[in-house]
Image (cartoon, rainbow, N blue to C red):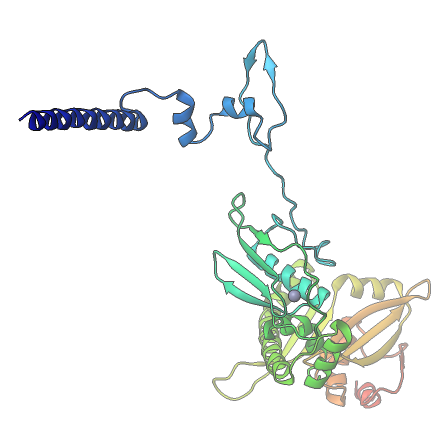
Length: 374
Ligand SMILES: [Zn+2]
């Protein structure tokens, strides 16, 4: 009996101890959860970020320029705004230097600058991602990488967001995958405009000589074809505005002789340009009133995609200098074209039967016959 009573007393004492222990632990938990005790204010602000005055006091802001005290009142600091360089496509394109934060006026200018960088540094770069909101470019021969996106301050601009600063681990290469057919068209359009018979191998050799870059012969062929189409479209556009140009020329210079001759081709086909003659009223009047009746006639080739020849009539002024009278663009230098040109010149200069006039020429083709006929 005594043993049983003692055991029950010990057990009840143990229960009391365990309950007391549990209560203590629960209290500590409540303390930790902030239910019992109110925590200091700086802990609550820490979760949402530093308060500005607290950061100033700790001097943890790398952009703050120090502390200002004005009559004991602490002023709030602002972040110092970083100013990034804006890429000037006219001057900076000569030697492109890419840095993080560099701003471009447009996405196209950025792409042009990266291409110029790859050509100048002889790095073979590739587009890893290329869309309207993000462009990532990497090197084909090393781990160099660049990311870019829209400029947040300029809605039309573009900016380098991240980049590995050093790009010296890979060697110089002759390949460049950023060079496209469109780039070749842009580069060689003027040359093809002047000489449409240029060969693909010449473009390839020129790329090697000028940029030290090897481009495929197929790529050159496709680029040449595109350029020839572009030249043809350009010519069509320019010949299309010839008639309004003629009207404006006569309207702005009353008395000017301006004649456009076209070739009537097949039915339902557009007219083709054949000849164009111009003699300005001021030149005509000045020559008749002040110059001696001597004219020089000559013709030369037009070095252009469309070819043709330029016929011109010049006189001599009081100082024995050249005085332009009139000129014409014709298909070829023939008796027919000289006839056509001299008919307008003789009418404009009122040469009538030609008595008292001197014509100087270098025995042009068909010219002697034309003068005799006039
Ligand atoms: Zn590289």
